[in-house]
Length: 70
Image 1 (cartoon, helix red, strand yellow):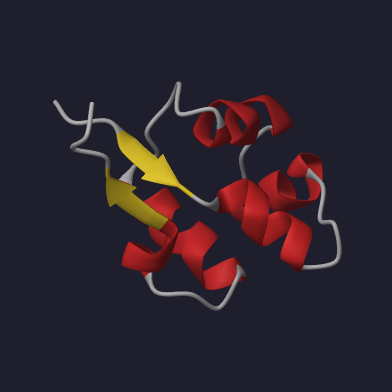
Image 2: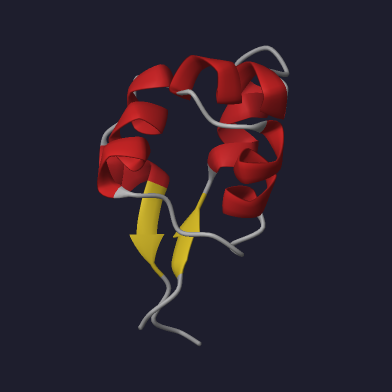
């Protein structure tokens, strides 16, 4: 399976330095799960990925994509 890459951390920083905990609260996840997503140790469900993208006003594919370079 191809790893899913993302720009969640950059988006948090662009949105006023939102913390992992704040994002987690908005999408009903723990801070630890947000950290794991950002570090590419955990791939979110499709529903969660859509929710995260919505928080930042972005399209899903602008926040998450397959990294086929690995």
